[in-house]
Image 1 (spheres, rainbow, N blue to C red):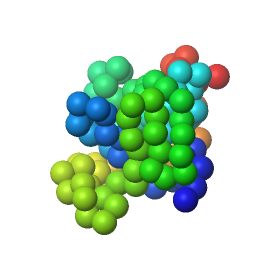
Image 2: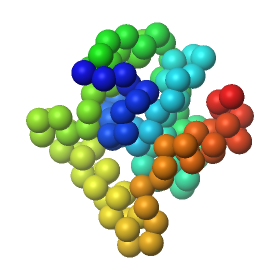
Image 3: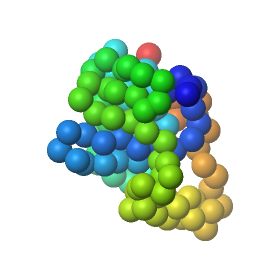
Image 4: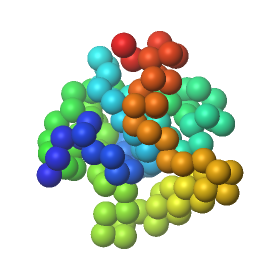
Length: 116
């Protein structure tokens, strides 16, 4: 498929306990993958910007430690998370905002000391 860090499509991460989170952007991090969730700027810092620890493996789906990352809504399999993403995009549009640029989110992570 593709390199996880070059994709600009929304992704879904599923942890071993079946917790699922939408990833609107992700970046390589020394511990694994740093990712932003929808409404990241309104959530507590440790909930809006997360780190999935572990080695990144695969070409889609990807493994990050014990978690699995896939494209969001691939074959209609993630309706709840797809609705969350759609609601967030609608919220942005209603407030005159656009989907955040990947490099702008990288700059936020760098400013917060989460990336170099």
